Image (cartoon, rainbow, N blue to C red; front, top):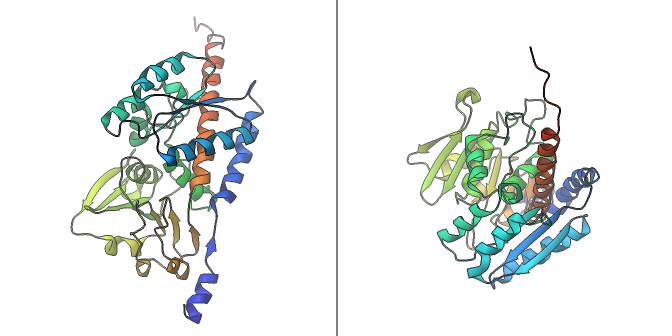
Length: 328
């Protein structure tokens, strides 16, 4: 690395996920104080994937360290459906997390959709996914019960909020207005949902994968209620990356490295892949670099569980309110 590059690298601030997670935990601990008991999360493990077991252990440790109860249940693949239905009906459990993959096909999507809406901490059921893409933020007309968002995309959003990429002066829902963001990954699990969420918050988002580039926006002046998607015919990452204030990557595998010469000077770079998508050269151009987000994702899971319990309490409080006086 040259002397100039070394100086540039020193000007890049590396933010670790643990620092951001601690900030979120403060919010969670405040919310826990309002509850009559610890929220209880049930984890269902039905595979031999070492990564899934690590995630389950990590979930349990984080729960117990932060005032949540956690139970891990090992089940056979053919018993997962019945176990979910039983847990749905069991008032002991406030939330359910399933460590995928189980069958590794569309049957897993079916299992996602039989988790009760009021216990789906991962935000993967059809109603939550529909709300996410349609930019519907509440489950009820009174706007007492917030919709649950998938954990990894929400973790990225919480990181962007921590970094003040969101502009709190603007109205809620428009706070990314004026931001141009590149998301390298368009998987149905993280990449596409993330692009939609960012666009629904007002950003111009370029979603990049091996098939090309799509632009997610709410139109000029963010006039539309929800995002729209436009194919950028003939575009590649070389066309869009230099335009972006923020670059977010999530390409699986250790062979992919983002071409850092395309970065806009002073860009914010975030990697949500399990491997590092950015080479060391990222520090020569980026102003902020977040190399991993795992610790934020697990805290967002707890935040979702807290939100589910709060939604349930809001429903109870609403049902117990005195009816409005008769206008007659």
